[in-house]
Length: 153
Image (cartoon, rainbow, N blue to C red):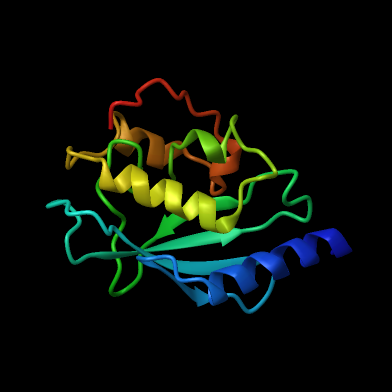
């Protein structure tokens, strides 16, 4: 693990623990490989009111040059949110996790982008072809070349 990698994540972890980001709570951050974050939509949205979702961040040793792997995970008390850009396996089709990734992004900024994406959603749907995608998708969503063509949800 490079020094820059661990210093950067250390600063981000300190920021997340020190500052209050409404609807965002670190559940697990025992190392700099995998973090779990609970996410709640703070805007009034009938699809997500009262629900809390769990995000999993996995960091490559090349972070922040390369994006983390970010996906929703299902637990006994957390579900994968319904959204036209979120597959039922938890993969998220979001440009800042793909071709618009920049090293200036942080765990907090990515989480807030996902929170905003959920807040703005009006459709209680999965992406078209969800079952086919899930059946053939790689474990790591970073290995998928999503097409970012629908910014209406």
